[in-house]
Structures are given as structure tokens and as C-alpha cells.
Length: 55
Image 1 (cartoon, rainbow, N blue to C red):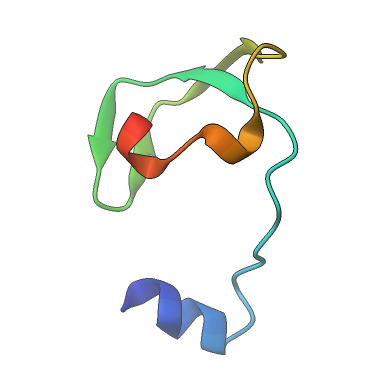
Image 2: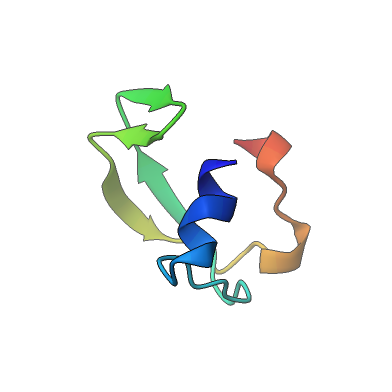
């Protein structure tokens, strides 16, 4: 519902995955990640193989 409302106002841009990265975070909240930090790129993984369940 929140994403649909944001999309209607042009606030969402859907993209195709092209890289996989490692990200550390303190907590996974309904609105997103709390204190995310980029840890590096993962060249050994195919972007198409990553699913939300893997999070």
C-alpha cells in the first residue's frame, strides 16, 4: 500500500538488479533498514539469484 501510493506520486523508480552488495544493519524495520552501511560488492553472486527471502 505505501509503495503503491508513492509510485502514484512519482516517488518510486524501479530498476533491474545489476550488482550484489553486502550491507550491514542494526535492525530490519517495516520502513527499511536501520543504520545501514555498505560493506562491499559481491562479484561471486548473480543478481538474478537473490530473493527477498535471502534477506
